[in-house]
Image (tube, rainbow, N blue to C red; front, top):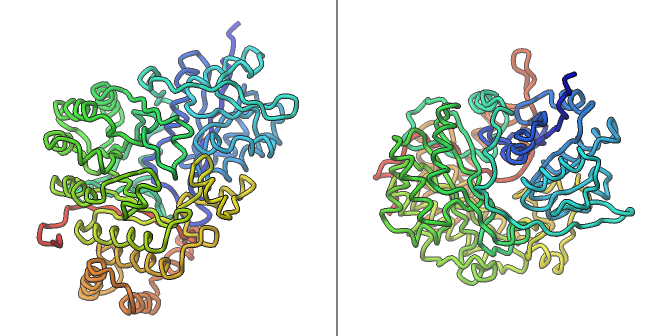
Length: 549
């Protein structure tokens, strides 16, 4: 008699709410679930992975595969994914009350007790999950208590019970992800035909990519954790400031094999901090270069990392086809840098971005305003720095976001002490997009808010991302916006009003474009969220003459 394999169901909720007119870029593969699936697959279990991003009928699929399954597991980060995941878990619990539900990921790791309060968890894995999940599967399969599994919150005698802490282990010790669990072409299709939704977390296309080239984006984890002590980030709590990485040469070799298999042309690392070790970065770049650098790639490097790298190490980034480096600048003044424990030398903002820009590598630079207790002067200094970088480096992103209090961080505790009222339910946390433009809870001063919004509009005009209007009109908008970014003067934005009046009169508003029906296809409503997204795709590098001095 052939024994049927025991089934494990993995589900990734929507990262953004499509009913709000937004989706997330489809090169963001379900890496967190692929990671934890590796060992159960090797151990002979049947693993089914369903991703709401590409499986429009995810609920029907879940109801089918959860029938007779051994367990259901899901993951989320702060934002809509929290609420959507909770909704799905409640539906699973109602339909299959005896099916164990397991949670993991960044948000469950810092707010685990909420999942038990809402009755949708049998265990929450805290922090690094690969080994923990393997042991959960083995314990449930054997009918044993989960108390023997380290790194969990479970319930004992009706009360929360934390098992012993799970230490972070070498990331290179895990099997590579079981890529057969996903149909990569589903993600390619959604990238190339995204529909009318506004795309969040879409990276710019490589400057050197010929216009019209179909993008086949891929993503990969090569490390876990981050050594930085930033007060606004939950990584210090979740990872203990440990950083574990696959060696550079091995990372490149794995990706080259995956490139042969999936034929992607752009790859982004989802690592929190890819560039910690210069030697590892060099080994990775050298291995790709020796193989002909067959795809463009991007990763997160610190401003100070680029400042300390040797020139030849930076050259290797370009030689290996790195097309974008993400920077977390976070604050414009030295004083605020010290408060958030980032401690970037503010003189390195420009020098590090220029090192990349002069090599033909774009940058995505992020800033935050509204930290708990931050002064108005400090917020304006951040806006000034962001404007300066945007003006000097056209089409390199310099995005300013409002501070969001994240559980498990020093700044969350500080915000609560200062009067911040945190969400109480998973549904409420799901309404708290990571960087949602919501100000009633963090008290950004009105004049800072006004300047920030005008900066955002000026950046859009300056980047030439506006398609409405005659060419001469857009050129005027770009010139005036460049002056505003250079001088920091945002008063009397008559060009903004003129543009919006023109768009309204010519019926080119979002409502005109999205709030209608096409042939047999009902489009979603307009983007009703008010968050900020990164720069739109860039197909060619600006000419030298377009860069302001």
